[in-house]
Length: 123
Image (cartoon, rainbow, N blue to C red):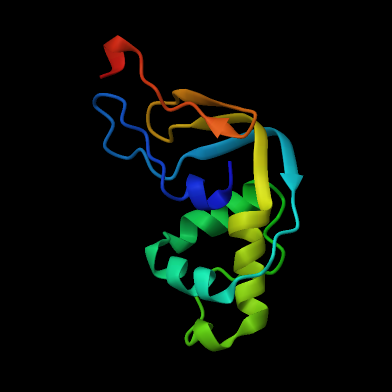
């Protein structure tokens, strides 16, 4: 699961009002080198919850100078875009789980795929 995916996921357990951001408990993390596409990163940044991305990267030990606040005029800062690209697309959780910050419900991650399915009593 890439951190781009993590940034879009939330817990929908019945009664939960604060199901985002999910906490990451990783047992296996992999970093894959991918071709840098600045235009993709520029288009994705406005869709992100920035603080959740920074928190997730920190939890995995891959924050690497990612600033706490989104930079002004980031579109023109290639070094910054490369850091965001690395966090969003190259860092991948292979095994572990996502934990709802409110209910504590854990959603397993297996072979890089988070299982967000709920049990009948959680819907």
